[in-house]
Image (cartoon, rainbow, N blue to C red; front, side):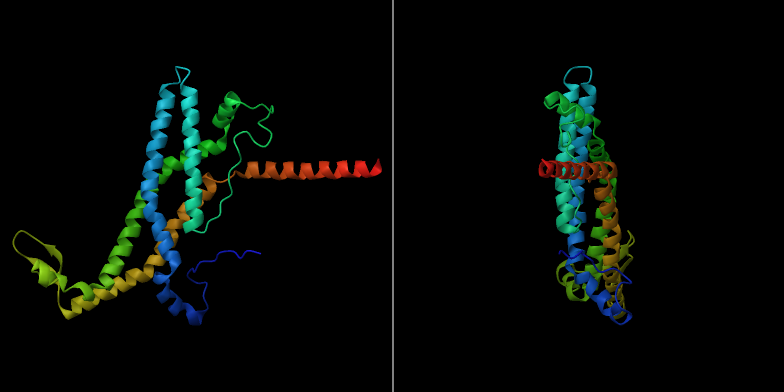
Length: 263
């Protein structure tokens, strides 16, 4: 039986192992997978947002003609296809396994059992799952920008400051400056991190930021987990209907088997 994925979180380790676990947290694969997820989220969110806005606006503008409905259907199909990519990305990098949403026409081709392009497009436009994919495409972009900025800032500043004593030599050799410049003005006044105390303090700040980074990554990706599971997965109603259909099918098969035995 498969074991559930349990990433390290603060407070889950025994008291005696809390400090070693906290020191190892910035080097864990989970942190780098979440960082990669947040970095890739920005271009994916831009692509999804631009596609959704363009296709939905084009379809709405063409509703006065017979082309509007097919274009809207194509827009929803594209959003659902991008949802497949997002679920796969969450499964690979966040270890979040979200089930596939219910099909457009259901298991029996819709309420009337009809199939065909017209019935399929109509069911697509009536599907709440399709419109939840559209909502995801619209709200994911601002969150992706926010989380991308935080992920890059914490990772770069943390590792940069923590390793500052190792690369400070670049400034006097290639830039002709004593160290990293914190601020400067037009009057020639500037402050550099060049004394032993300032270098040590910079390194300490970087280490503290690195120790905080795993918690920041977990907080940022928790919002993504909620959005992916809530908007790109099957609805609770659809899951319940599928369970009832499965139970009904089991009962029918059992009754048929009993009838054959009686005969």
